[in-house]
Structures are given as C-alpha cells and as structure tokens.
Length: 143
Image (tube, rainbow, N blue to C red; front, side, top):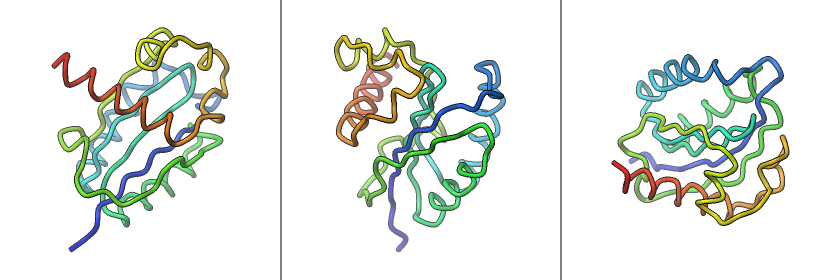
C-alpha cells in the first residue's frame, strides 16, 4: 500500500507572473494533478502562493521538484511534509481562492501580516494549518 502525505508550502510569485495568469495556471495544474492523484488547494494572497497538496510521496515529491524549477515561483518554503491517514481535499484536484488581506483577517483575526510581499516567510506550520483549515471550513459551509 502506498502511503499518503500532505505538503504545505508557500512561494512568492515572480515579477513576470500576473494575477490574470492564474486561470491558465489553474487549468494546467488541475489536469496534471488529476492525472497523478494529487488533491489540494491553492490560495493566492498579495503575490504569494500558499498551497496544500496531498498524494503519494512519489507524486508529491515530483510535483515539488517541478514547482522548484517553475520560473513563476521563487522563495519556496515547505512548512509541513508529513504522512496523513486521509485526504482533506479529496474532491479538489486544486481548489483555489484569491484572498485579500481582509479575507484572511476574517479567518484568523485582524492583522496587517499580509500587507507585505513576503508575508508567508514568517509563518509557522501551526498558523498555516489554521488558515487552511479555516479556509476549507468556510468553503464547505458556503457550498
């Protein structure tokens, strides 16, 4: 039996990446993820990506290697890479939400953390998990 893992990482969008590039990125990523059994979600916050991906160790490690070579990403930081018993995002080849700082404030309380372009650099794994869990719950409740 192949074990499942999840990986939570952040990266900063390169200067060449524009927000209107997101639909094409999502289309390609969703197709590629579905083909190899990767599920998860992506948040885009002020030029920063925050993503959780779930799948086999082989598929996740391959995707991380691909992302690390992708010129649209820089300063990739892995917060968490650990085994999981079940998927949290089993229905999403890649759920997506572009978040504004006000959206995040509603999830984790008011702060100015997301006003800088490098906001995700200072996060710890607990805060990242809290944001993603809150985001997932809001999406489920609004569905």
